[in-house]
Picture (cartoon, rainbow, N blue to C red):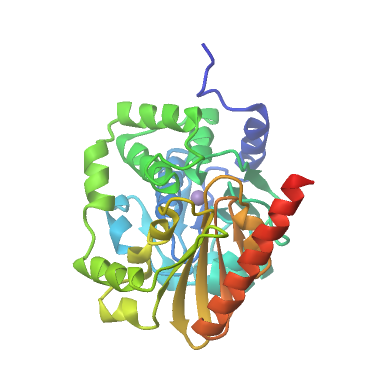
Length: 344
Ligand SMILES: [Mn+2]
């Protein structure tokens, strides 16, 4: 039988290269993208504990505060020093950036990371960008989550996947695959998830913590967002919007809005789903989701964004009406061009 858990040769070589910078006694800063998600938080806490086994002290230094819903992943052995900001980066010997292919995703830490003279390592599964945080990378877009690469890191270096580490990696895999539903739910992903369950993860507990612990305000916001739903059945485009200040009005944080873009995507015949969130001050966050053949990473690039082929995002300047008009028009144009290309 095919051994799904063996680590591909190229990943193994990258891990060995990264490990040369991770020597006992060093102090490591671990960072991930603004508004850390389950993959970012799960990968960070798992890596921090694995480094601990190697005799390496580490601190998490993120550009935005640790999300409340992932607080249970932290512990006395994992320290979140995000409140120290760039200062914490300068005090470290090595920086490891997780789940990011573009340095800009480090938000307020981006300039400090660009200027940093210490070794910088990247572990990531996004499509490449023009400006990666470092060229010293373990990067593979076929990994279902950065958490899969952290699991490989543990395997290659002979480290132990303790119950705490298993839980953190399970959160990474579960959330980045949309609950083991998206196209990145590979046989290898599920094999690793199986191993993590064997190591002590309780799937129902994880479901409860991640999907059955929503604040009621999320449903109020979702109700308002669904009321804005528009569908273009000719092109298969669906979109919803959230007004400026709505999250605050319902007492929600950014992480509470995760997954809302799945609702327009859930409509039959939708090829491209859009979620517009008005951040105020003429900034609109747009999430792009697709099913099947539409490459939303390519589409997001038109607006300076990026991500994955079926899930991407961009931050666009302008008021929400003008951004919506511009993006929906561009989406029609994009799908028309893609279809022509497909025929040719
Ligand atoms: Mn990820």
